[in-house]
Structures are given as C-alpha cells and as structure tokens.
Image (cartoon, rainbow, N blue to C red; front, side, top):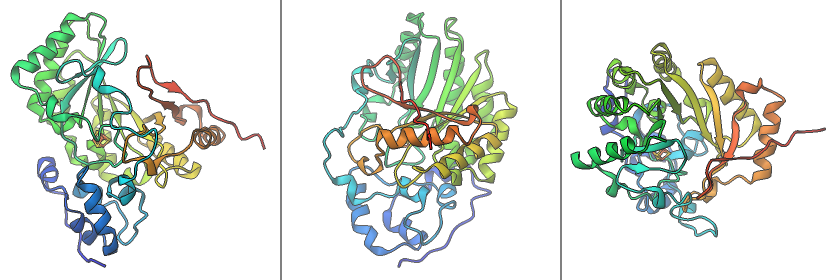
Length: 341
Ligand code: SF4
C-alpha cells in the first residue's frame, strides 16, 4: 500500500484546482491508499492518454477501494492497451466533420465549437481521447474564421460549446465568444456540454454565469454525470446557481461497465438528478474508441436496463438510450426491452 492524506479544497479557486490536478499515477494511488501493483499498468496506459483528476473529484472516491466507480472512470489500466476489433481511434468519424479548426459540423441546424482543447479530468472512456486537439487550438484569425463560418450558414440555429471541456476556457473568452455568436441573427440557442462543474464545482461562479447568460440567447447546459456519487453537496450548490440564472439543465451519461451498468445505480442517478432539477437526457452506449473496450456493455443488456428503469421511474427521469454512429444524420435510439415477467 501507498499512504497519503486528503487536502482541503473549499477555499481554492477553480483555476488553482485545475492547475493542481493529479497527473501522476503514483500520487493518485498514494492518496487513495491503493495497492502498488496497480502502478505499472497505470503508468503504461497513461503514456498513451494521460491521467488527470482534480482534487474535488478525488475527494468523492472511497480510499482503499480499487473498484470505486469514480476511480474506475479516471484510473489508467492495462486493459486499455489491448487491441479489440471494432474499436478505433476516431469511432465517430469526427475528423471528417472537423472541416476547419475549431468546428465540428455533423448535424443539420447545429454545430460544435471546440472552445477549449483541455479538460479538467481525463475520462478513460472518452471518445475524443485520440482527437487532434493540437490542430484545434485557435489563433485570433482562426476564431474569426470560425465565426464567419457560422455567419455564412443560415441553417445553423444552435451553437454547442464543446471541447475538450469548454468551461476550461476563461470567462473573458467565453463572454466574448457568446457576444459574437449572439450577434448572428440566425443563431437562436446556445448549448454547453461540460463535465467541469461535476469534477470542480467551484467552476460555477457569478462571472461564468454572466459570461454565458449575458446575451439574448437561451442557454442549455448538458452536464456529464455518470454516477450518483458524483452528485455531492458542492455540486448541488453549483447546480442551484445555474438554475437560478435560468439555465436549462440536462444530463448526459455514458453506460459504463463496472461504473453504472446496473438498474439500481441508474435509478439512483436519475433520482439524484431529479432532486437537483436536472433532466436525464441521454444514456449513451459506449463509443467504440480504442482503449475503452473494458467499459463496453452489450446492446441487449443496455436495453433491458432502460426497460427496468421504465418500471421504476416517471418517464421524464428515464434517459433516452442512444448510439452515435459515424455518418448518421442524428443519434440512433435503442428501444428499451421491457421486463415482462
Ligand atoms: S471531460 Fe469530456 S471531453 Fe474531457 S476527457 Fe472527459 S469525456 Fe472526454
């Protein structure tokens, strides 16, 4: 065992927490009193996709438990290095939709902006773990070109801030970008996909809310929360601030083996989201990205799980089970299988 202690985070700024994230597998194991035999595979797997976990997220993990569902989402493991047929570097074919730096234009009427190449946490299941972020760090001219792309296409009604994690960008950048987009008459909505408030709730500040909500555009925030243990009190307080600001809150989870692939946990997650006024929007089956095969849950099991949820929860708390397939014009629904016993 490697031993260590937990540090306080209450008074730290989000920038400090982000900058001080743990990136060394040995430090992570030490902090959580985990067995040293996990270190060699963690080092090998993190050479391909780095470890990154911020303190407020770490503090929700159970020390001494190598199967903790939050730890499992961030700990590099040896299985990531195995080759599996069907698992690829770019499972959603995004590199063909990355038509110019900063833009991914896949679906009619909406477009993704890569607002930040960085994330506060590196999720081992991430479908963009091999994305060429270095080609999507924009210069001032490239930002203007990205905005020009939106201005020139009147079919774009919704701009989606994505990344990396878009909230890793500073508030000045977000405020500028939001004002520029709001000045484009055909854009009607702004959506923000983020995991940052989940892992660093301190990211939700008055300044962030002003940056996102200071224009005519209605704002929807899609949080990426995968397990009920992620919904702690600091996150609850952050969510209340977002709700007070009038931001519509949805959640998108990924169905992950060993994390949330059982009906009891999925029910608990939906109930916890409901308690905070967040609608469970999507439950994604895993995108088949190389290195994430150990999280895979087969379709039948996934459909049965959501069928079980239908019998336990009101319809508005049952997420839609979907798959994203490269080249398809939308996400594909997978219909729940009802338990008829
Ligand atoms: S926060 Fe989102 S983009 Fe970043 S590693 Fe996690 S899943 Fe991927």
